Length: 145
Image 1 (cartoon, rainbow, N blue to C red):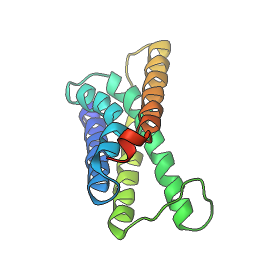
Image 2 (cartoon, rainbow, N blue to C red):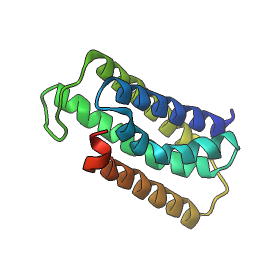
Image 3 (tube, rainbow, N blue to C red):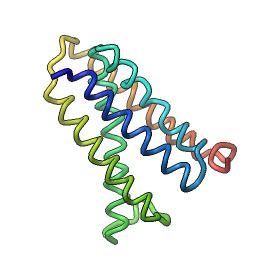
């Protein structure tokens, strides 16, 4: 199994689904900013680099957590996230969730030769980039485009 490419595909599916969400909802600029960190594991994965694992795990874990919060809101269990979600957006949350779970499972099964400190560093950097991109996407100049 070609783990790097599979992780890249899972990240790419997540990215495309999020672009479609942007096209049918608030506008694409917000989602383009939010998905910028996903390009790291996509490029690393299609190049066959082990960095795809750690960057992908960070980004996909955050996106899966967000999808879980959306589903929890839709089920009426919590209000960590709120909003109105169209049927298309709800369907895309399922696509994103499945892609995230698949990418995480593949990443966890993939054994790389990166040192623990390098792997942890990559994970932390990409988690920070993903969280920063999410935060930036809510700035008025971006969110209202």
